Length: 590
Image 1: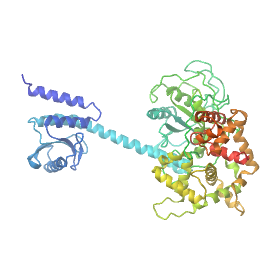
Image 2: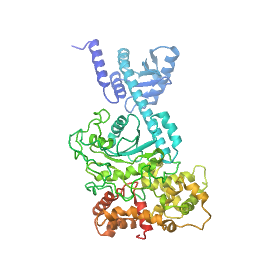
Image 3: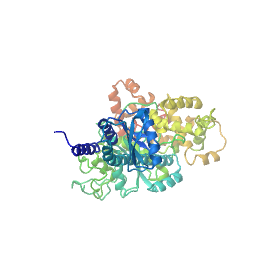
Image 4: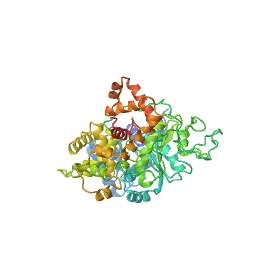
């Protein structure tokens, strides 16, 4: 016995309801309508443009027929109609309940009950279309906000603090005057969860930016917690989560000896990938190199290690970060993150003034290098990044003279990069190597061409030589230091200053010995010689391994142990290789 019209209609409504729950529901429903009616089913905007159709539906004749039909229906002011189309094919049209107005159109259907079917489908299609449009709008807003946050971080990195504060004040939250920078390394799919939890724990006061260069990093500018940075504070006598007794150290960077080296870092070497990183978007500014010291200075010779949490290892339950349980009292934010996301690693800077964000970011990256190999997967920075002690007026003059060809450069074409853009490229490339193309949002071939151009302008092989890279890195740090302009204005005219003269001062010698002391006193027995050989090989790990007569994994493991002793990143950017090269050059050991 054939099914009755009411049964067929019920089956059609049920099929549409099932399709509406699938991903890509609108396209799936239009495909079903095309098969059900025997004619192409599409959604058409009020301008006549086809907005959606079955997979592969690109028939120009259908687009012309539906555009003409929509224009005629609008002229009549009717909500639905069956209009004659091209080649005698009727066009069934019905307006959806959407804003702006959208129409469901079927061209040349064979089903005599098409009108009823389209009326039933229009209700479900309208809801699904509104949901898809809302999701597209949400993604656009999220993308725009993400780029705005990148821009704020970029302004902080290049020293434009007032501009960053104005933009952040409009976007919310306002930027705090004193911050700690957290760099969280985690699986990319979990970045959003971690960002939500940081925002919750900071009471909405954190400025959180997914790193545009490294897809597995989250950068967070967080108002300082009460208690020492990165630690749990004296009140953490017991761990609320486990009830176990906690140590009473004052900082996560308290020295307890080198951390185990169970997870060697990546030893692959981009041509150059250090310098304080911006982690931001535009390509037209110089790379941050403030050279300013953190607000809370650390002892230069103190290596950054970490003390174990009271409970040993983090629980293996990765609760939903955004909606997980509240933080137990006296448990620091970095500890909370590694408990909730065991795959993550967290590096934390010292407390610094907002203007010192570039310094804090570099501190957090160095702490992250220690955290990768630490059993508790978190670390706070302990060390000294201030290189402006190397330079009096002579140093600033040397930096200005080295960069002068780039500063005086006049591009031949208006579209070519100018001096500031070239300096920005140099700083980004020294930080990230080939990944600078993602930071600057340019093609990798464009980046390579700019670096070659910088070789020609500066007259040194920045693209190939660690010595040239270290000199350019120091010049950028000194040239952009806040006190550089005043020192240059007060300095008497002098003959050309050399790098040897800058590194030959007593202050430079003191700084250099402080940089190398952790390797000499607490580092592995072969650490200092391994680092020296690596630097002589232009920081290329295969060449260093060959010179040492050991395997590539063995050389990587030695450098990883040196990272733990120094409390600094060597194999990943921003690396301490430039500072170490300058320190050894100052002491005559290279």
